[in-house]
Amino acid sequence: MNSIKPICFSAFAILVLAGCGAQKQVSSFSSLTAISAPLNVKKTAPLEENELKRWSHLDIVKDTIPGMSVDKAYTELLKGRQGVKVIVGIVDSGVDIEHEDLKSVVWTNAKEIPGNGIDDDNNGYIDDIHGWNFLGDITKENLEYERIIKNKDLVDEVTYLEAKKTNDDKIAEANQGKVRLEQMIIATTTADEQIAKELGKAIYTIEELNAVESKDAPVMESKVVMQRMLSYGMSVVELEDAIQGDIDGMISVLNGDNLKQNYREVVGDNPNDINDTKYGNNNVMGPDKEKILHGTHVAGIVAQVRNNNIGGDGIANNVEILTVRAVPDGDEYDKDIALGIRYAVDNGAKVINGSFGKSFSPHKQWVYDAIKYAEKKDVLIVHAAGNDAKDIDSFNNYPNDSDDKITEFADNMITIGALNFEYGDKVVARFSNIGKVNVDVFAPGVKIYATTPENTYKYLQGTSMASPNVAGVAAIIRSYYPKLSASQVKHILMDSGVLISTDVIVGGNPKDSRSFTNLSKSGKIVNAYNALLMADKMSKK
Image (cartoon, rainbow, N blue to C red; front, side):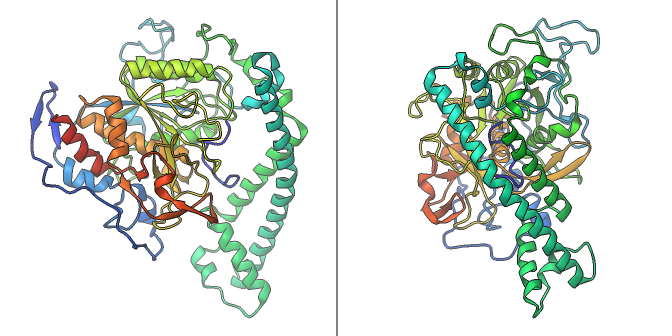
């Protein structure tokens, strides 16, 4: 996959609806005031761990953290109320459905009899109890430009030349990056040894590091190096492993390893035939739990059980997670995404999260048709904007809802940029793509704490994390106001957001400062409290 996986080092929801569906008014929200952004306010104290673990739930006014006011929404608007169950489709790398904080919210196909080897619901997928795995037993895959280079006849000459240029650029970047990262490993190891010697211990905390004072210049230089390195939220060992992983990836690019591989042949289908649908299996966790970290984290952001005193809290409290495994380590196939969207729609999903993307899409029409199908069936698709720090009004980012980057062909897809937890000029994540036309709204996407495989939890970052934050808010709206359409929910998320009118740094470049209002169509950040106020008002029209 191109660049919408979590960035580590390398790029490094009132009105209650009774069970029968009839509306029952409990209280009026008409006297409540929507949240607006405080001006010239900045949280100067560092976030405590309990704040950081759930900063996306916090309030921009009360906490001066650019969260989505989720806690405020539950406490002041939803307390004592109950919505309807909402199925959220997670189209991703797979989900650890056995995780302690997810297993109680996993969707189960009531139309299938487990383990009988029969397609009981006649949908073409045998024993699809918790979803479907379109990848079979593969985890690794080519990038799309690599597949184009190897199958030139599938595309026009212009697309082929663009793919070839991308490959050439990747080789040049790998050459430069390899040298830089090798130097970084040396610098990190040397600085770590210096600080360990100074402190008299091999393992030390960031607080201990910050307290180091010395007249020895090398010690203070090492302190600066390690402060920068540890700011990524990893231990030294984890950091060095991540860097080495990037180096190994660059060596693979230089050797052309991926161009020599045909991973898809293991699946056994024809990826260029949309009518060839009988492939994959029902193992939504895939063959290796370690390889479903991304999908498990995304699912947790949406749905990990709230207030159970383990791990983190999900955004939505009344959802079921339907897993579609369709995103490998590499670029997803258009066919898998198109069929995956249709599968989630046909099995009752009202919100689908897509934390994936790529720059080339040979069969984009298949995905466009699937998005239109979802629109016809009133399903909202929430999609990550991408992590290349680019303006996707100019650069390709698939899938999207506009073939010309100007006119939308559907109104059920919302594209999400990523926020940092620092409210101020650094509020936009340095890696986040932007776009006045093609990015709709922003949401928390840096250091998001959620489930990872084998009952673990981690901080990850990327627009991959911002997207499920919004999918969670969308699920809350659809739970408490199920009569609102997917299109209405999309526009509520955009229109009710908190407007940021100040200038912010873009792409992590201090010299590139722009008005936040110009970075997305709405110029706003998603806010659950405001969204529920607007949903309540809209539901009465």
